[in-house]
Amino acid sequence: MFFFFILPLLVALDYMGGASVRQAVRRSLYDSPDWKIYHQTTFSVAAVVDGDTIDLAIPDAKYPTTRVRLLGVDTPETKNPKTEVMYYGPEASAFTKKLCENQPVTVLLDSVADQRDKYGRLLAYIRLPDGSILNQRIIAEGFGYADLRFEHSYYDQYALLQEECIRDKKGLWKGVTRAQLPQWLQKHWPDLLRLPAK
Image 1 (cartoon, rainbow, N blue to C red):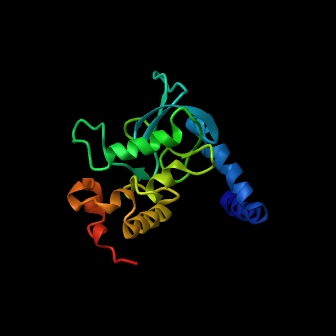
Image 2 (image 1 turned 180 degrees about the vertical axis):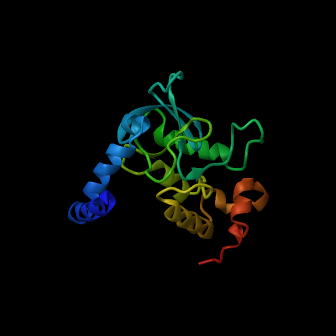
Image 3 (image 1 turned 120 degrees about the vertical axis):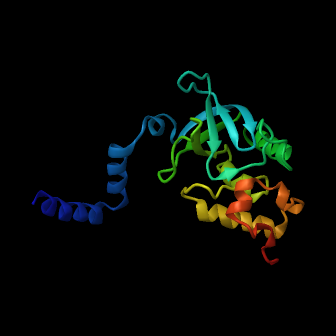
C-alpha cells in the first residue's frame, strides 16, 4: 500500500524538479567518500606515471599521492613489466607530461563508471587548466585508444573520436600495425584498422 502512495509522489517530484531532484537524491544516497574528496576538486599533478596514469598531490590511504587511471582511454604501455615498451608509448607519456605535469587539474568522476579499478586507482576524467579534458585529447590527437572494455559516460563519443583518428591517420594511427595494438583492442574491435577512408 505504501508503495502505491510513494510511487506517484516520486513521479510528480521528478516531473516538477527534474534533473535537480534526481541529482539531489543521487548525491544523498550514492555519494562515496571518493566523490566527496575528489569530484570537481583541483589538485596539482605530482607525477605522470604513463600516458594514461598520473599521480595527484593528495594522500590516498597509506600512499603519499593519489594514483589516477584516466577513464575511457588506454595508451600504449611503457612501464608494464609484462610487456615491452609498446609502439608510440613514449610519445603518449610525453604528451600527457606536456599537458599536465606540475599543473593544477580538476578531477571529474563519472556516475556511470566505477570510481576505482581493481588496483585501487581512482578512475577519472581530468580537466586541464585550459578547460579541455585530458582523456578526450589523448584519443582525439592520436596518443591513445578509446577504452572499450568498460562503460562510462563518454563511451560512444570516445569511440567516434578514435574512428576519426584512424581515418585521418593521426598520431599513432599513422603507422601502427595490428600486432602493435593491445590484445584487448584486437579482440574487441577485430576490424579496427580496416575502417573505410573518408
